Image 1 (cartoon, one colour):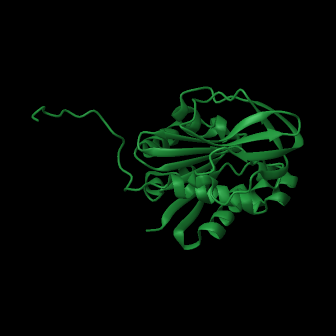
Image 2 (cartoon, helix red, strand yellow):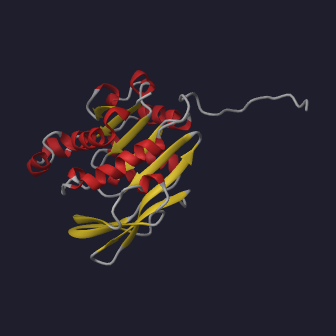
Image 3 (cartoon, helix red, strand yellow):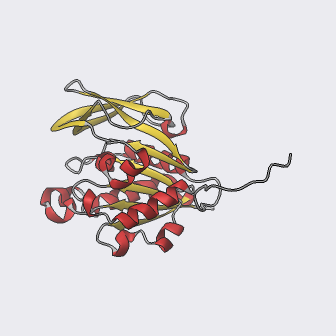
Length: 241
């Protein structure tokens, strides 16, 4: 069975800013989808969805046909409808994988699943980022250079207001001196979540084949091993052993 992937993004910067549109003529979601197709090939069926689609492209039907959802957001977090967030959350708790990217750390869906502020320190000075693998045996790290070098990127820094990751795969350091937990794994209910920080709209990060490899590995890792169903719930069980 192929992994059914939905690549979601706001698609607002690309509409409003000419330099971003030149950098990502097919949208950030288009660049991510192209990278996943290049690395996953016949392993996956990849579709895209954006904020302005009906129900943000995340209706019950569309989510029922999604095994892994990738999420990029930045300038319109609060415009995502609460009912859609609740729908996605239930699907993750039931086993759908979620890959949250860059400024998606402050999305409604990530904050709701983490239960924390998900805040961080940042500046945008085009600094070099080195993404260091700290869990070389982890499936998401397979084939990723050590370090993965990103020539220019928005700087993120600790403290990062998230729960302690179940598994930490990557730590980044920046030329200005900051360090950041840039690759974090979580389990919520039956679903796997991976947060990966590189990927600001002002830089061509999502055209980098090594970043594509990370995302493809993350999709494989987050894909459910059984059909996604309802979240676990209270159940009365007679004691009869």
